Length: 276
Length: 344
Image 1 (cartoon, helix red, strand yellow):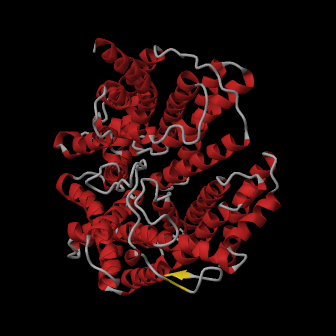
Image 2 (image 1 turned 180 degrees about the vertical axis):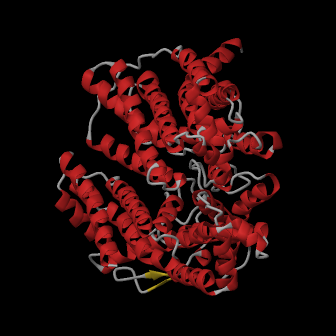
Image 3 (image 1 turned 180 degrees about the horizontal axis):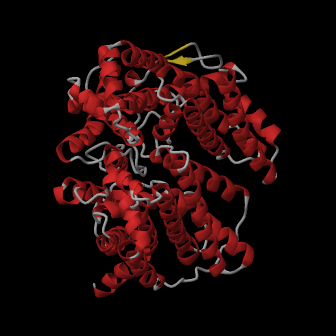
């Protein structure tokens, strides 16, 4: 019994890590006022980019860095389309998600990538990134301007904050961390890329930020809960428990919806998010 | 007008050129890929039949997306509403003991009601607690996927019945022949499924309702400026909720068409929506929320889907069509935006 608890916990941590990295990014993007659904595209394309690079160079660290870069490229494209050309951010997100899924599926079919021994990139990275993200958003001047852009873009603009620029920068940060999450999943845990590898983890990250009521601590807690639920689902057959796993898969989305239905959570959403 | 057209064709050209470059860069032949796409989609009556089978659900989803987008209640959860529609349709088809055309009608109506109700939940959450519609429809999609997965793995719900010792899969029984949509024409030639007729009628009705009725006028007003609409006496919550339910209902209907037309296996399967919900939404985006424009766009997307199956022979992965689709949509939305900015 203790042994299985141990298994679930350790696989829970491994399943949480990619979500937590990406959530640190998504949290920043949403605080700046972008409901960024292309986080799925960022994670997926970064997962491919990292494996392709790791396979070409033979170095997992280079792969991770490439993943971060790929994620930033997606964030840069999203930022320019929705905060320079002023396209609807959901439209941009949908298209980017479709493009990333199509492109990575295409590329993985035409190319053969070496399978790497998964190199357990340190999850300790998170211990640096999460506090840094919190400090940037809550304590730095940049973060203040960012939050102002998310709460009241018009007033922010009047006081001389370049709202669109802040939002583009937030998306770059989001791309970097979501890319790290995707790369961590591909290079750090699995060691290879398969078609639609992230399988909706980006949407899970969005659910986590909502569940966390746009606070970093609660968001990371949400990631841990979702990761553990996933680990539990995978461990159920071995434990000999017959339970329909669908409840566990759907739980994160239901929890996010329930959180939004509770009045206190929805009043904490950055106000610009509610205007679509 | 000419400037618009040339801008559009430039955008389409750029999207196609990028796709061709991708094929060439990965060692394929763009010309061969294009030929295969054409042969699989538009070259002969059989290919047209395959294309049109995809057009029907795409057009239904797109027509619904036009309604919700016009009202400002942007619904992006069609993929889930399609599945819930198919689930309800399958349940009715397998459980209801009526025969003949009545059964088909029951299947279609129940699927539409279920899809509408699923989207209606988001409308309720919006009205009750101000939960953002885009986010809730998106999240509900993933819940819907699990609801269907649950239904087809639960024997007392819809999982297929065990025959002898054969293993059962996660799918429902085959629908009875009486529940399937018929086709005009015959198989080796051009066969037009009733689902397409349904979809075209729905698109025309939506176009008329949006552009020629008081309801459509109010809806557009609500989408343009909610405060002005409220002052003009529009019952915002009711109208917005109705728009969302209509769009969900049309997506549910698309699910029933997927279920009962020869495009699929005529069974409820977890993966049966094959991205039709997402694609239908993209169709509406390219058509800029005009249901009649959605007709040719849906034809293009349907042709890409049907042609994608023929790519395998050329060595180009079928995923090429997904890349082409996404690039085309990207080109169209960017050009549409540039045009708006130019006119201002």
